[in-house]
Length: 108
Image 1 (tube, rainbow, N blue to C red):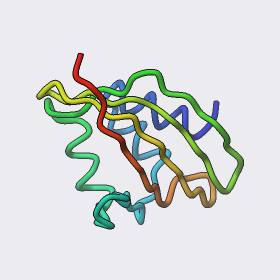
Image 2 (image 1 turned 180 degrees about the vertical axis):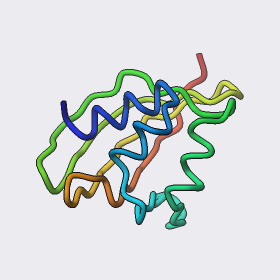
Image 3 (image 1 turned 45 degrees about the vertical axis):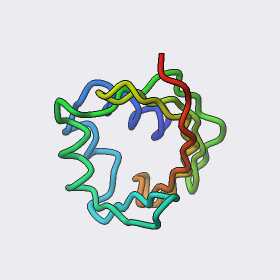
């Protein structure tokens, strides 16, 4: 199974152990809109919280042992939704960095 798919599954299942198995301790998520870098521990707390966004229709566009690209939709507790394009940097079998670009879409 791909590393990106393992990440998606861990997030959907709110499985912190599985999440930490694919994400490096040095991992950062870069929010494209602000340039803000969020470290693994901060992000993981949000992803396993009751406020975690729900990932839908995830599609891995490309992945090798250095980079992965995925597209998915996220739904938030307030009803807002986004289409997200994510790029993942991979090193030694773990995700070390990701950067996302998101577009707001109409609420359901």
